[in-house]
Length: 87
Ligand SMILES: [Zn+2]
Image (cartoon, rainbow, N blue to C red):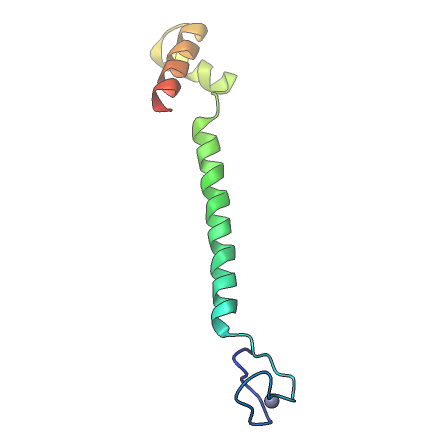
């Protein structure tokens, strides 16, 4: 509980209170929780950015080469040119 809820000594604030309840504003707890959620969102976005900007794996290059019916190194160069254009 926060905001002095449950105070049994009829205090108006923490300095008057003798029963030791939590006088931390509820807003502090709400903001801490929101901060944690935002931190998780940032980590998720960083992971997505890393996945989008990572160099292609050999398997991905092979798939692209086969799909475009071109050689491995030609596909690799095309992917690298495409990735450079996105930065
Ligand atoms: Zn009290």
